[in-house]
Image: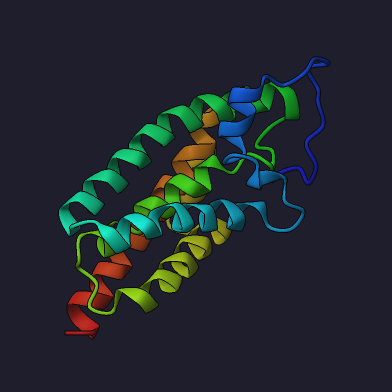
Length: 172
């Protein structure tokens, strides 16, 4: 269970770089639903790429960003626990990564109607992230930032499976 407000338990200032990375460049400090803000930031950062790049480029840049930010976000989230306690709510880099993963089918042009699939992608990802079915909750048992990141990565993967199924079997 994420704590509602970050409290500095280390007794010293949280360094700026890991704080910015852990909070998805500060959106984790927004007062309501920081995880949703982290996911929305992923969409906002992804949209210009989607609008102006070729599908293969969109896919590989999105996948690359998810991998790089997963590594950096895991480190930063581990650091955040030293200052704010276990799985702090302000640390939402994991939601940004999970949302990028859930956008991958739209990135490669798998989706038939990608514009309305963007909010579907967000809804699916947040559903899996919040309710944590199908083994997602067990990923939280991993230590530090690994557990914080792993459950959202799996939520993103489950979202991908459903988005691909919708587009292959329901919308042909």
